[in-house]
Image (cartoon, rainbow, N blue to C red; front, top):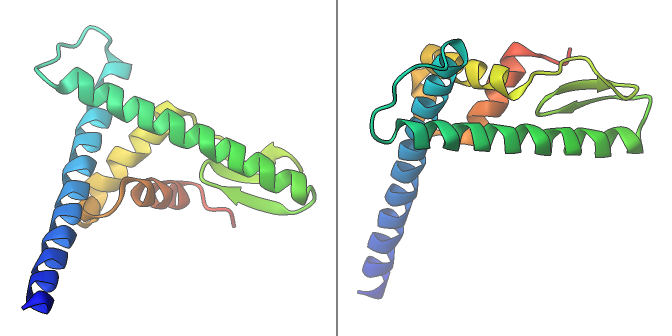
Length: 139
């Protein structure tokens, strides 16, 4: 009986975390799409929840890009002559070859999900990583 209850509990937890990840990614997608619209026209109107979603997307991407820069800088300091990759592009001898700004990352994120809707069940960070790797390969 304990094994059955444990199995049911684990299945519920897995389903809950996967469905939450999908819901979160959809919220991020909607927020980034609104941010992209806002970049084109700052006079757009917001319906309930859209501004919060836009701020969530913007905050997430700015934090993600900032962490990527910090990660890339740490790698370059350890091997200055090597090409190292980061979530924000490639570095060679301390200079970014690809240097996307958060506004561009938002556009790439929305475009990647539009082109690959099956990715809505994945984690946001993995989707962002794949979107940038597709747009800015290091090779």
